[in-house]
Every structure is written in C-alpha cells, then in structure tokens.
Image (cartoon, rainbow, N blue to C red):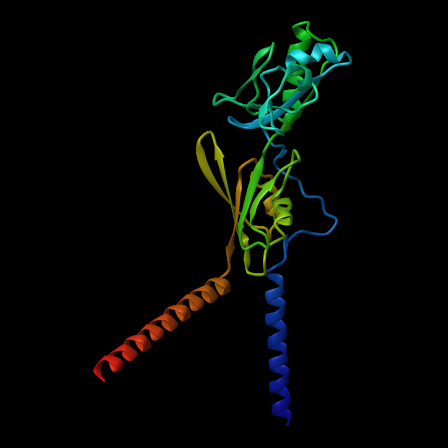
Length: 265
C-alpha cells in the first residue's frame, strides 16, 4: 500500500512539474522584475524611406494661400483620380518619395525627407514655406498613406496590418495578430527588414528583457515578423502528412487490386 501511495505521489509530482514547465514556455519577459524600469535602446519612431507614400496637407488661417501647395495635379487617395485646386485644400494629397529620398512639393520644389519622422518632415516643409515668404503661418500635416507590416507563422490571425502610429513594438504587432499560439517559439521570433536595398534578419527572444536592447524591438514599415512553430507542432504536421501519404498509398493499392481482380474474372 505504501509503495502504491509513493507511486501515485511521484506520478502526480511529475505531472505537476511538466505542467509548470509547459506553462513557462509561453511566458514573455521571464527574467524581468516587476516595477523595475527597463531602458529601451532605440527611439523607435518610424522614419520615412524611399518609395513611401505620404499624404500631405498644407493649411493656413487664410485658406487661399494654401491652395497652391495642395496643387491641382495632386492625387486623391480616396477617389483614385486627380483633383482640382478648389477641392485640393480639403483632400488628402498623396505623394511618393522618390528613390533618392526626395519629395517633390508644389511651389517649394524638392524636399529631402528620407530618414525623417512625420513631424520632422512637416516642420521642414513649413520652414521652407515661411522662408520663401509664401505663408507666415503654415501648418503642415503629414501622414503615411499605406504603411503596413506583416505577421506570419504561429499567430492567431496571420496577415498584413496597417500601421497608424509613429511607434509600433514587436508586442504591438503580435497583439494585432491575436498573439502567438501555444505552438509559437517565443525565444526565436524573426524580424526581416530592408534597409538601403539590403535585407537584414533579427532574431528576438521575447522571453528575455534583453529584447528592449534590440533595434528590432520597434518595427519599421514593411517589416515581416515570423513566429516559428515549436517541435511539437512540426512533428504533428509531419505525422499528419505521413498519415495522409500512407492512406493515399493504401487507397491506390486497393484500387489497383480491385481492377486486377475484375480483369481476371
């Protein structure tokens, strides 16, 4: 009887330990201490790159003065057509940054914008308008027109996601995708990013507070986040494929055998 109790107790303890270990695998920031500030290495604001599309609207207390900067050749991102100068002051003006990181603005001409944040570009445009003596009180609004990131792999809702803020962290991206599934490897999340025509790959360990030191903690436009499946999901997928293969093989063999029997009658 004592041996039976010991066996039952040992089994229960083993199950408890396995359960705790499995639970810990899905925790984030396992080594972070509560109420302890962690310094984030990167500022993280999204910066403009070549071929980004922006919506830019210039305003003034005197709306007529702003009309030339919202020119008649501007493209309306909402209707997909060119708009007239009378309507342009109220429409979103979509403009594309060229391959050299320059933006062609009406009246003031080329403006260097690659590497700037939205607010920095808005300030630069406003300064050029004031310096040219065109408007004394310009206000400039700059928005990203169609900025997206991709989240794929072991998340609840993989796909493309629009980014509407100046900062988006890796945790924000996972939240938009419905978080990782229990099969996602939290210690090896991959972020691919293109910088000056060169694709870089960063591997993030979301179980460690050292993630805050990574340049990929904050995402940039067009980043791709990939969550790898753990070995259990990979094995399950392989077993499923093998099962389907053998079932198909057996079905084919039965069909061939039936055909042979039919022909030999």
